[in-house]
Image (tube, one colour):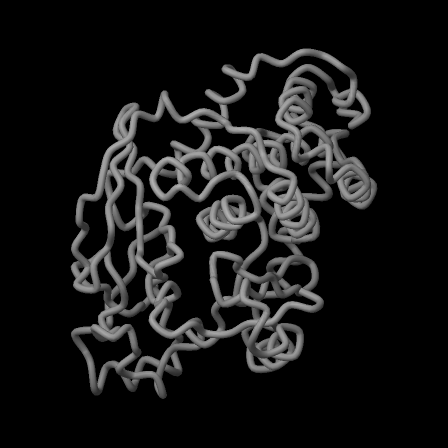
Length: 362
């Protein structure tokens, strides 16, 4: 977050596609003034949220000029975007890089703004921290008992020392193979010159990305806020991908089709590798990413060593981004340089932050 600045781009409205929870102290205003705009969000733990246009578009309070009609009374989570306060056994603020306002180099200092947000969220943090800490300690205990708890600091350091390697699809393919075959992955093994079938690797990357592009409920599809500030979704049905644009009215408008089998991993240009390296460093430093790896280890019954789960998750994430860059190039001609990888990260990062984790966002 050091050196980052954040600004709100006029006409973007990307954050208004994220249905915000309405905290108890905020409900009175909406119940009194806009009762029909307050809904119960679906899920294992239902909560009050603001309604969406057509139940799947932007917030009902976003007008046709993409300005908020209740800006002075917008929710805490509206104010917080693109900052995410993640609580594990400690507290850390992470930035949602799907927000274009974080890529302009203009606006307010991110660290300064994050400190204010944390101070305002102190009550929620204090309520969440004991429970999150207990969950983390329970995970550590189970993982150590199973003999799979490697040193996360050492693993993260090894990634930091090999960032360039993580932009090489061949390296990623070898790393994924090792994660499946070895009891404990040593990253040096993925550097050995062993040929990887690029078609198989491209297919694996496509399958990973397609999982997040496939849903019967259009509300659950990943949204790509394009350079022209249009809102775009890609819905996969079998091997066919339909590109649709979300209108200000919440309607989905067909724009085109693509055959997923014909979208292959394309080689990265040097400036694209640099942007990707920087993003891998961000992922590697996120506590929510580590918490997501812990979640997967617990879901898999504490069978995989942390090194296998961590390297495997990171390699899968990077391949997902590369394939999304190829997908966006198909529809938007963004290429595989700095521009194309930036756009793929903008498309991907909101999904990444929505991944299950053993911690909590507040």
